[in-house]
Image (tube, rainbow, N blue to C red; front, side, top):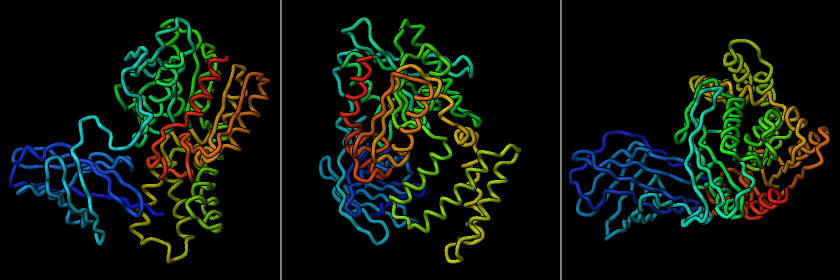
Length: 459
């Protein structure tokens, strides 16, 4: 099933009548092709005008400008004429009843006033007060890169000695809760662990919260430095039983840090890489394409193209990686059947965008990572887990890779576990596709929480 993506353009918004009644955030669920799509309209006063932005939490979109806002005689109109988008609703107390139109699609749409801080997505596992453990806001410094990091330290109040771990997020800039589509996975983990007698430090990635240090040249190595700084921060506070739990890219950062810092006493890899990362990405793109309905011919063609691109990125030692990528992309696009080729201007635009996205230092560094380099050095306890429906870090290959590396290290204290029917975020899933992440109410399977906490407490 294809999902409808809503886009808006921005131009000046005028309102002939100002009313306090309509100002605020209004939320509702749009039924699109059998899928419920939550939308939020944020209406504000700007002088004598009303202006609106839209959030689509399920799609991870926020503050999208809406072109025109009017509120006259209790009727709200939101429109973007150039895109054929419009909402008309009548205010009745704290409810707007109306119709949402996009192109030929016209759907009933009811909006209700949203409270400040309230989520429109159903996330029943998100922790709610009161909390029976200590919560401390912390700040520390990565002394190598000289950047500041902020986070939250949660510790049990009923124990003097307890294990504590640093949570490490996956790729992309995420806040300390590792928030994705309304799911606050790290907050759920920290809450669960604190209640069971385990401390947790979760940290804002660079560029989120109060953490800084974003540069064009930063790579996984820089993020590993941030995690190492977190370990040193905990050690300076007097903690001795310090562990690391990393998700996805964080699952390779954990052994990178642990192999260099003997203050780390245990490691958990949550869908962490266990095979060379360029191979991981080839398997990932193939699995996602296959699950999305690609034909065998398309899978073979995509795999061939990706191998060429990844080989250029992994092996290039010159000064113009983007230029080399543009050549490869142009060659591959010109091989497409004529009916599938975009026009010259569109092709040039696509090649420019794709080469720019791939040529960043993070990609080159990540593709050169061989996880065996780090896993094969670890003799401390390790728990490596995956979900059977993970299409981003495939469980069979990556768990086997971690197991082989730890055996090479003669590590006697490790476990690997594949959880049935869980996706990359460790949610109970149907397909494992990224599109499901926001549709699933569960943030993380309780089975995974129990498996991790039990393992930690038995060390």
